[in-house]
Image (cartoon, rainbow, N blue to C red; front, side, top):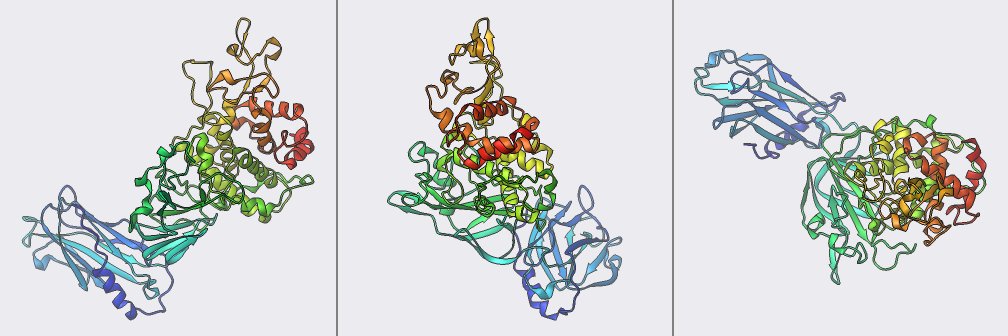
Length: 583
């Protein structure tokens, strides 16, 4: 049995007596120390431990194990302790000792021998630096004359949070999360919020609602990558509305208890046409991460998808020396405006072409050509000769996008091929480089595209779209080129080439320029120029692990005449013409 949380009796004691504690107590880091040893127990000596750090305003988790089952017990907590451990031998308990005084106690039953309590530590400054003592006693027939055993004692010294503050509500991008009480909260280095849980959300504003049959302003916890969602019943604009699952909209039922290791994503729906012409049904989205322990002050937010919220990266990990310091060619976009383009979460956990309908209007471009070009702009600006301080906001925000993309891949995202699925690999490799994260840097080899011809054993769905679209023309059997598709001949052998659906539908390959589809020049490599040049500048070609991609971009820039079809962002072409020969 696990005992229900007891968050009232002892926290009331602490709050009531906090006024008795001297305000001159020195500031101290919160710590729990074990005192002495226990006597008695089943399957080992009864053990008493804390599962959390005693921060003011947090829940102090207490666990007792190896208790005799189905017996009575007594939980003891005190603001004082015996000057020396008091021997209980005179009370028929030889070898047992008592540590705290008896200010408050709680009877309980031992259940199956494991008991857990949560004690709410009030957010009272008077408690900072104070210490309380606690211990557990239990019946154990035959143990001694008293038939009673005891655990070790614990001394809990309270401390202010190293970072953050206590807040009863949080607001970001027009979305407000209201809690049932103040919780320890703070912000990651990119500005997104965290809260120490479990946390009870009593309302989310604006609230989810049904308007003319349309469910709007939904929220999700730890979304998957299959595109199922609870955000907005019209999200995919009629292409796959069955992916809306009402039960995934956690905002529909309040209050909402969220456990640690959770990301709550809340959205505001786009009502009416978007001012920028975007097709998404979402106007904005924000992420609240629920953690079990306080993160470092400069921590990056863990990925929003999946349940692993381990803090793996900090702003102090960023290695600015991995970035070049090139003079930007004329026409450079604004560093600040580009950073603003990454300030909000890039919501992108639908590994499918319809993902464009999930991209919030105010958070990111909906179409891949535009957001891929924007990541290329970020890469080139960050390798320009701005100071580290000037680069800081853009670098932090762009790296967060890479962390989120990597989290989606770890949770099973495989993008396949077509233009809509471009743009996810470069931010991962970039973030891996500046964070010196070998796993992220290895994404190109961890998730390679394997294609050995139509229907071949071992083919995989291209994890990253660009790799499934770029290839070298080869003779696949005597006198047959590219397995007979695309109109290729012997003169094309070795040519770096592009096919909109090459690994998924090779029949769409076309040797013509632009060929039977205008996508070759309207909506493919013209969005890759900035990222491809950035990777050359940073030496990331080996990590990309697809030489045909780089060779095709070279060919594209040599073949397609200047203009938007050559480079969607004109400055990318200017930078290419200025620096490609050096890299």
